[in-house]
Length: 150
Image (tube, rainbow, N blue to C red; front, side, top):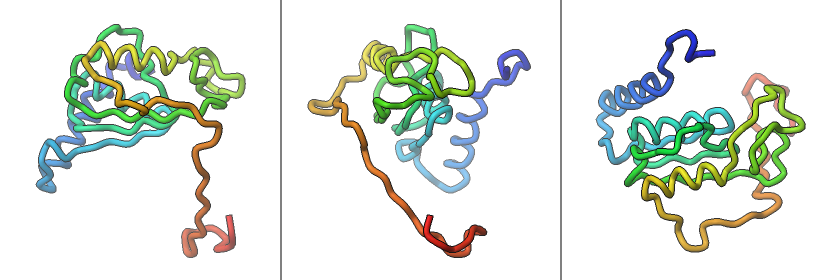
């Protein structure tokens, strides 16, 4: 576990984002993050603890912290998207029946409560559930695969 090794993942991600923004002349109000699954969990943790991103998109990963505060998120934009049929990281929390980590995850309701506690409002009509968001299939010749349809 990284915490046992003394690795500060939040500081690492925040420092990397800050360094890259500075190197490429990107203003602090224009740095955004996107994460999926564990990446979504990490980005929400970074926005809660370090606040370096102006906004994030978290896909299929709740804020998996036991803390009751997320104050660094104040003034940030957070979009969380999570499929209700996720069998690895359930929306309602707990251990996913198809998850390989056997970790009990926090619920999306827990994430929303932490964000509300930081003063993050929910946009009208921004919360809802649909069975299938979308599916996009790409054909990418020359990607090292067999150039045929996916």
